[in-house]
Image 1 (tube, one colour):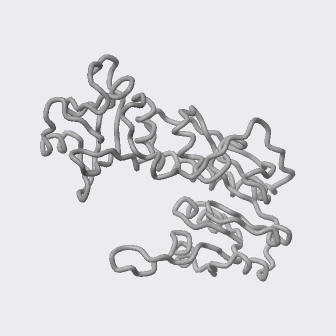
Image 2: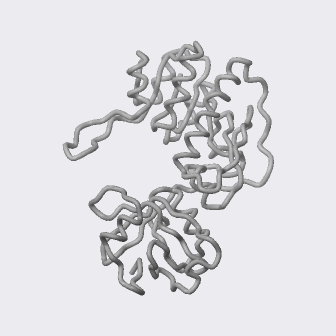
Length: 286
């Protein structure tokens, strides 16, 4: 039995099927209205399950009727109720090195914190938030300019292999988590606003989440890629002040690489500069 919903949960499901495990039921979140037409669209996991010929439900309680030996949870996005946990053993693939970054946004929080490494752990699911004992972990170095989606893809690939290997060898006895827990709260939209008074290194991390934004001439401007220029470049710029494609911050400067103006497609920052022609001393932000 498998519970999952977003794209990150597709590869582990495919890996289980490819390795010959019998998936009796896939549980995913209900179809949702998307796009201008408002038509119902299945989750990526439901679409994958249908393609693989697996039965799908959007009700967790349905797992109690299939007589599964084990449930696998990957990025399901909802709590599994105690009465289900009491009836069926479940394991969870979590994208962090537990107990660091328990919670909803472990990949994003690791990047924002400037962590040098992260990983993926297979743990027993309990009622507590990612508190269960761990069957095994795989560590990954976080690359300096790696975006959240790039890091997540590597974690998913490593996690799928970890899951298949662990189930193939027999889970064995899990070990309690060791260390000081930290919590990965869901990213609040307000956190994605670029406050140019903050240090450049912090803003560069925020941009790596691929949803950061500022404003220019009163309209929203997404900053999809950025880099830290060489020391001393545009050192005299005020916070938010633009010089070419370099912006001043509270400490240091940030070089814009890929932008998305409101209502337009992403484009290189140089192309945006040629079209917008920011004046000398003009600033991003309010």
